[in-house]
Length: 270
Length: 306
Image 1 (cartoon, rainbow over the protein chains, first blue to last red):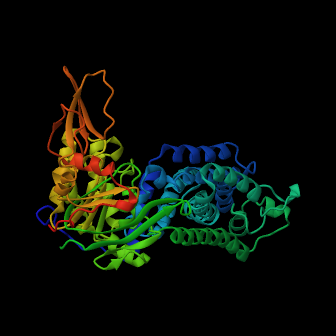
Image 2: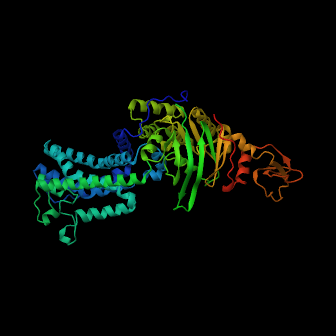
Image 3: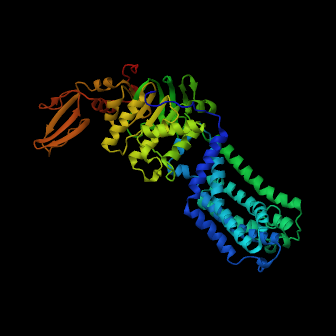
């Protein structure tokens, strides 16, 4: 055999969890970011919302914090639906491509592949949002100066990213149960109900509470941004509530991933 | 590297809550070198291979590789680290290049050292003659090239047990020969289990053969012994083209100007003008298929040590 193949290193059955996860993330990122649909859908939804920015007239404000927070609010209103929609079909992709047996026959369990998909494909789906945000900051910097940049980055991290991470975590797990089509419908319904249908409609909803995922609390507490449903609830968010509003979607996303890994590991022979 | 000692004991796999018995009490020990796995569609070959690779858990019975049974998750991973598998339904990521796909698979197989992994991927790409097109996306590959990517990923971890399920389906004759010869070269001091419908592939490469039918081992032994099963039973029978075909197990049919010649199996003379001919492995296989019941599982001499 050595005449045909030379062994270069003994394979490791159990070790290398991080290396495998990073590899899975890297290749999932590459495959997802190349899809035109990712860019078209996500950028399209951002453009749709930003074509008539809300609240009216905020672009004339001289306060950098308010300006970027309100732009961030416009970004986060619709684009998570697009991010979730383009991620939902990645979940059963291996089965659809006939890769399940091949992957299960490797000594790597479901964990690195699930986390790699969440991190890699998730980051790839968020990439158009980040690119659009960087483009916006470039435009605002040209108009208002470089002072916009640090505030803009902070607003992205505090207002836009937590909700997107939450949607990513749900979009690489829930479709295992619901399938991509039903999940997309559910995500659309949840996002509108849970973030935009405020108490004025008389329907029980997390909109306007720290448990929404649209970033109103950090926007209001730290950036003097527009308050919508929270304002209707008479809330003046504190820093602690803003932290809770960021931590909640992140922790729910983490929990969803951990539970899915547990369930899939129980069901898988690998 | 030494070939593994693969022992299968009373292996049973059922589906649909026991309604379907895909494998029914299979026991055998795989020898070193190439072992052919034959059987009709639905016989249980793919199920058998999926159990050996740890992809499917058996309902009962055991598989042990060098004494390590595939019972616990950690034991399965230990065995998987030295097993290669080319499944029948081979899927690839179409958007990755062959190099990227193999790099990813190498990592999943535990080759985490970057330098070693790169060297290994290049080595297997050269071995399957894909070095020149390694940076092309897989979706642009022909069926044969995809199969070669499949075998390349199977041997990335230098497996001691290599399991290939229908590797030559859909390949043109030249590609099939190349594939066959590659598998034979790889066999060396490892065990290669080759499942196929193409008897000729097994005749040309496998000293030993296992025949599975309806979840049972119908035959296990040296390839020559399978042919021997039909010795004295193979006849050429020529009839007018318009005549009713003989009601006998038929291996092949050859039309000619003088009529149609049937290669049939019969324990007695099927017709006065029938001509007895020597048996091939294919004849032996057909004889076995028309003569096997679960109660009369037939065993040849023990699998030949290689």
